[in-house]
Image 1 (cartoon, rainbow, N blue to C red):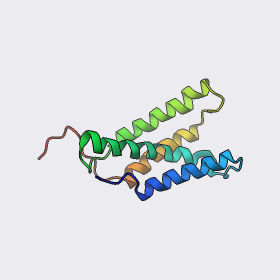
Image 2 (cartoon, rainbow, N blue to C red; image 1 turned 120 degrees about the vertical axis):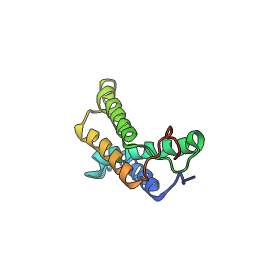
Image 3 (tube, one colour; image 1 turned 180 degrees about the vertical axis):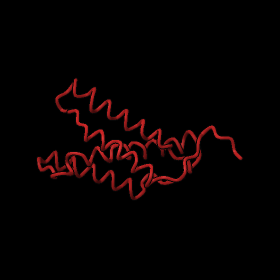
Length: 125
Protein backbone atom coordinates (compact mmCIF):
# COMPACT_ATOMS: atom_id res chain seq x y z
CA UNK A 1 0.00 0.00 0.00
CA UNK A 2 1.13 3.51 -0.70
CA UNK A 3 1.88 5.63 2.34
CA UNK A 4 -0.67 7.86 3.99
CA UNK A 5 1.96 10.46 4.87
CA UNK A 6 3.88 11.16 1.69
CA UNK A 7 5.88 14.41 1.27
CA UNK A 8 3.16 16.24 -0.68
CA UNK A 9 0.49 15.35 1.87
CA UNK A 10 2.72 16.52 4.71
CA UNK A 11 3.25 19.79 2.80
CA UNK A 12 -0.53 20.25 2.35
CA UNK A 13 -1.19 19.58 6.00
CA UNK A 14 1.63 21.78 7.26
CA UNK A 15 0.53 24.62 4.97
CA UNK A 16 -3.05 24.38 6.19
CA UNK A 17 -1.94 24.29 9.85
CA UNK A 18 0.41 27.28 9.47
CA UNK A 19 -2.25 29.39 7.71
CA UNK A 20 -4.86 28.58 10.36
CA UNK A 21 -2.44 29.13 13.24
CA UNK A 22 -1.54 32.55 11.84
CA UNK A 23 -5.26 33.36 11.49
CA UNK A 24 -5.86 32.29 15.08
CA UNK A 25 -3.00 34.51 16.25
CA UNK A 26 -4.49 37.41 14.25
CA UNK A 27 -1.35 37.53 12.05
CA UNK A 28 -2.64 36.40 8.65
CA UNK A 29 -0.05 35.87 5.96
CA UNK A 30 -0.78 38.26 3.07
CA UNK A 31 -1.82 36.61 -0.22
CA UNK A 32 -1.50 33.07 1.16
CA UNK A 33 -4.22 33.57 3.76
CA UNK A 34 -6.98 34.08 1.24
CA UNK A 35 -6.83 31.14 -1.15
CA UNK A 36 -4.01 28.74 -0.32
CA UNK A 37 -6.10 26.71 2.12
CA UNK A 38 -8.77 26.38 -0.57
CA UNK A 39 -6.15 25.24 -3.07
CA UNK A 40 -4.99 22.41 -0.78
CA UNK A 41 -8.49 21.45 0.45
CA UNK A 42 -9.34 19.03 -2.36
CA UNK A 43 -5.87 17.42 -2.45
CA UNK A 44 -6.07 16.77 1.31
CA UNK A 45 -9.58 15.29 1.08
CA UNK A 46 -8.65 13.24 -1.98
CA UNK A 47 -5.45 11.92 -0.42
CA UNK A 48 -7.15 10.84 2.80
CA UNK A 49 -10.17 9.27 1.12
CA UNK A 50 -8.03 7.53 -1.49
CA UNK A 51 -5.87 5.97 1.22
CA UNK A 52 -8.92 4.44 2.91
CA UNK A 53 -10.48 3.34 -0.38
CA UNK A 54 -7.24 1.63 -1.40
CA UNK A 55 -6.83 -0.05 1.95
CA UNK A 56 -10.36 -1.09 2.89
CA UNK A 57 -12.49 -1.14 -0.26
CA UNK A 58 -10.49 -1.73 -3.43
CA UNK A 59 -7.47 -3.52 -2.00
CA UNK A 60 -5.35 -2.18 -4.85
CA UNK A 61 -2.44 0.08 -3.93
CA UNK A 62 -2.26 1.43 -7.49
CA UNK A 63 -5.86 2.60 -7.76
CA UNK A 64 -6.14 6.36 -8.31
CA UNK A 65 -9.09 8.65 -8.77
CA UNK A 66 -10.13 9.53 -12.30
CA UNK A 67 -10.15 13.27 -12.98
CA UNK A 68 -13.95 13.27 -12.97
CA UNK A 69 -14.02 12.16 -9.31
CA UNK A 70 -11.66 14.95 -8.34
CA UNK A 71 -13.70 17.53 -10.25
CA UNK A 72 -16.82 16.25 -8.49
CA UNK A 73 -15.06 16.74 -5.13
CA UNK A 74 -14.18 20.30 -6.11
CA UNK A 75 -17.69 21.04 -7.33
CA UNK A 76 -19.29 19.59 -4.21
CA UNK A 77 -16.91 21.51 -1.95
CA UNK A 78 -17.59 24.72 -3.88
CA UNK A 79 -21.37 24.33 -3.65
CA UNK A 80 -21.28 23.60 0.09
CA UNK A 81 -18.73 26.19 1.21
CA UNK A 82 -19.22 28.96 -1.34
CA UNK A 83 -22.98 28.83 -1.98
CA UNK A 84 -24.87 27.04 0.83
CA UNK A 85 -22.85 27.86 3.96
CA UNK A 86 -22.81 31.66 3.42
CA UNK A 87 -26.61 31.55 3.82
CA UNK A 88 -26.27 30.00 7.29
CA UNK A 89 -23.19 31.67 8.78
CA UNK A 90 -21.37 34.96 8.42
CA UNK A 91 -18.12 33.05 8.85
CA UNK A 92 -18.44 31.83 5.26
CA UNK A 93 -18.39 34.06 2.19
CA UNK A 94 -19.04 33.04 -1.37
CA UNK A 95 -15.98 33.76 -3.49
CA UNK A 96 -15.36 32.75 -7.10
CA UNK A 97 -11.60 32.73 -6.48
CA UNK A 98 -12.12 30.04 -3.85
CA UNK A 99 -14.07 27.99 -6.39
CA UNK A 100 -11.19 28.37 -8.84
CA UNK A 101 -8.78 27.28 -6.08
CA UNK A 102 -10.82 24.10 -5.40
CA UNK A 103 -10.71 23.17 -9.07
CA UNK A 104 -7.03 24.12 -9.32
CA UNK A 105 -6.33 21.82 -6.39
CA UNK A 106 -8.15 19.01 -8.19
CA UNK A 107 -6.03 19.40 -11.30
CA UNK A 108 -2.88 19.70 -9.20
CA UNK A 109 -3.69 16.47 -7.35
CA UNK A 110 -4.53 14.64 -10.56
CA UNK A 111 -1.33 15.61 -12.34
CA UNK A 112 1.16 15.43 -9.46
CA UNK A 113 -0.11 12.42 -7.56
CA UNK A 114 -1.20 10.64 -10.65
CA UNK A 115 -0.49 7.29 -11.97
CA UNK A 116 -2.89 6.25 -14.70
CA UNK A 117 -6.34 5.69 -13.30
CA UNK A 118 -7.40 2.09 -12.79
CA UNK A 119 -11.14 1.59 -12.88
CA UNK A 120 -12.87 -0.64 -10.34
CA UNK A 121 -15.07 -2.46 -12.82
CA UNK A 122 -12.58 -2.84 -15.66
CA UNK A 123 -12.10 -6.46 -16.68
CA UNK A 124 -8.51 -7.72 -16.48
CA UNK A 125 -6.86 -8.26 -19.85
